[in-house]
Figure 1 (cartoon, rainbow, N blue to C red):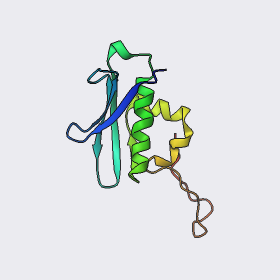
Figure 2: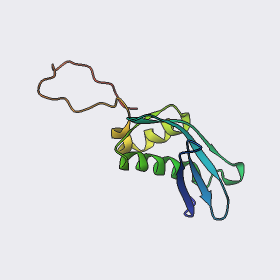
Figure 3: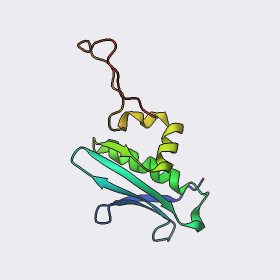
Figure 4: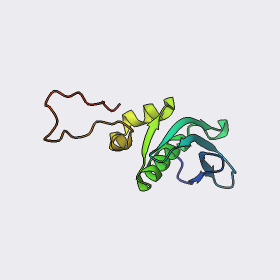
Length: 115
């Protein structure tokens, strides 16, 4: 896994961008944003950087930044969906993720389930 990946959010381009060393863009995650959530739509890594942990670093950095901004994530990108299955510590960020039942909910109320 690469340790020199830097991730920044580019609001003008509506994407998170990863650079490795002096590389301008080694990979990116496209997103759309609302006042409540960020929709992660697509992840792409340049062929020269595949297999070096760029996509994983991008996913973690994007979700960490979403958490810091107190937003939720709606994930439609297949890569990030698969990544989230291996990283359950991010399930609480998912839009419509299951919430703990409160005392005023009927016991058999169905809750949306995370991945």
